Length: 312
Image (tube, rainbow, N blue to C red):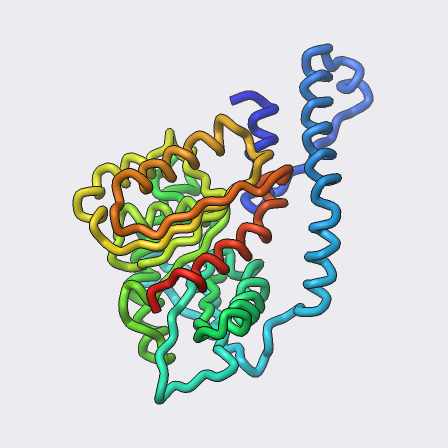
């Protein structure tokens, strides 16, 4: 993979980086490298310039919303028996939460430390706008490194822990939520939302254990991971999964690298479209936005699609 491709597909949520180029090294850069760097910076500034209004909108929205209502938030820690890690869990309750007379769908949110408040606030807004029942938003904080928990196969020392992480969600977290909160206990009552490696994990869950979730919000999913191995998992499990009822929203940014991100994304979409007759499927490509710039717009669109088309 070229340096240019790496920058276009780089996920800053995975590992932050800093470029430090000494004056001496800078003088030694060859012409080709300088051209590549100019392309990278041009890509960056196009994305940022087009995104500026969106960023202002999100900034002021964030100032207005900030933290989800503390009086409607429950928090606890759960230690996994499958991988030994301890996960901080937050649960956002609907404003009309009634543990006796109602049951609620659940949205399990990956990268929960970053995304909980945004998702919980927009679920409340969407349920009000559509006059439908709100959901329990379950935030899964970091226990292990997300590189380990969200990747399905081992490509390095800190990858390949998705099977154990999914086991934790299936066998510990979901039973805990459904025992202690008025959560719908059916597959169709559960959704998973993830971005980047989180989207990869959602696709892995879809393929490898389709009985856990009936709804999948896959935002800029890293389907490219390990030679697109999740597409192989999907194919291997297709016969048992294809006739089930599914809701899948897939979102991506137009400026995400066309070869590394877009092609596997489209391959998964077309596979689902052609082979899953009972699926409710939608995709969105945010114009002029990249990997991180498209995250919040696609989160809102994915949640909107979920509230408009869920079976509950």
